[in-house]
Length: 330
Image 1 (cartoon, rainbow, N blue to C red):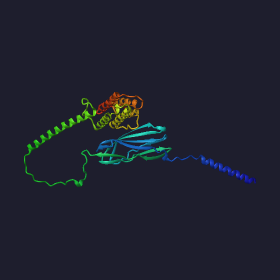
Image 2: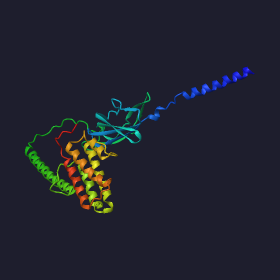
Image 3: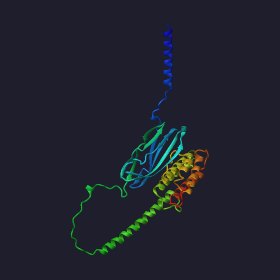
Image 4: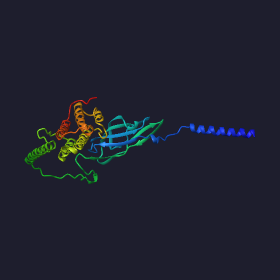
C-alpha cells in the first residue's frame, strides 16, 4: 500500500509540473495582428501627359511597429517617382501615423491606376508586408484625344510633278490675314477672361488676368457661397463659415500639393513649412484662425463680419496665385 501511495504522489507531482510548463510558454501573436492600416490617394486625379501629381501613402500602426516603403517603389512603367518625403504624427489610442508624399510623373495616356503600394513592417522580430488600395487617374494628351494607331496613318505618297508658280503674294496675304485674325481672337479672349475674373472676384479693379484653374475653382466656390445667402442668415452663418473654410482648405491642398483633410489648422500650417513661402503661410494661418473662432470657439459673427472674411478669402487666393520669388522657410 505504501508503494501505491508513493506512486500516486509522483503522478500528482508530474501533472502539476506539466501544467506549470504549459502555462509558462509564451503566447504567439500572429504577425497579421500588428499589420498597419494603409491608404493611398492622389492629387490631382486628372492631369496632362508628362504632368506631375502627388501620391499620398498613409500608414497607421501600433507602438513597437516599424513601417517603411521599399526602394525602388514598384509602380510600373507608366509612373516615375522623382521625390518622396515622409512625416510622422500621433493618432488616437496611442497609435502613430506615417504619411509619405511622393512626386510622381505620368507617362501614359487614358484612365490609369496607380498599383497598390507595398508597405513593409516589422513587429516583435518578425517582418511582413501589406498593400494599399489602387488609385485611379485620368491622363489627357497635350493635343486632346488623338488616335495613336499606326494602321490608321496614311502611308507615304510617291512624288508628284508640279507646275512651278509664284504664289508669294498669296502666301503673304494669307499670312497677314491669319495674323490679324489671331490678334482679334486674342483681344476677344482676353476681354472675356477679364470679365469672367471680375465676375468671380466681384472687384473689376483688383482682378488679375493670371488666374489658373486652381484659383478659378476656389473663387467659383466662394461666389456660390455668397450667392446662396447663407452668410446673411443668422441661423446658417456658422455653416457658411464651414463652407468657406472647406473651399480655402481645398485650394491650399491643390496649390501647394499637400493633404489637408482631417488636419487641424496648426497641423496644416506645419505641413506648409516645406511647401509655401512664409508670407503665404501667414495669410493662410490668419484666415483659418478667423474661421475657427466661429466654427469651434462659439463666436457669433455678424453678416458684415462674414462678408469681410469672404472678401479676405478672395484676396488670399489672388495673393497666392502669382509666382513668388520668396524662399520657402526650412
